[in-house]
Image 1: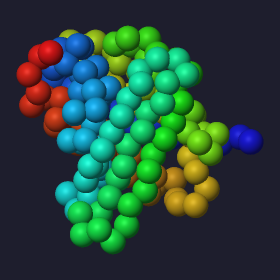
Image 2: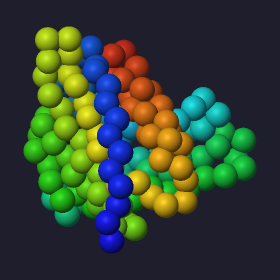
Image 3: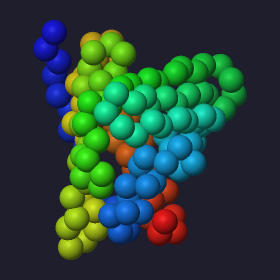
Length: 141
């Protein structure tokens, strides 16, 4: 199956190790992995190795809806690149590139077919913006 690709990006004003840690450490993932303040991410697990699983739970704070997110890593290059495949076969690739203004984090993902491309891009970008805010407020690890 061929999927349409969507790309989002954010430049994080933090060091590369902090940017990486905030993106991959479950402690931080639960702080940013949701699109708006009416949602939260109560749990996250991350077995950061090829063949390892990324798991998280996203829920509406009012308890009205929630879903589990699960993927398997295909590529793990520390502080450079992550590629994982979702259970439905879609691929997600995130890269980390140091620039003068900070770490540019770029994610390209295969779109699903149930929601508009714009809605998917906006939702994933909102989550990445939450990540940026979290990483910029984190202490270097």
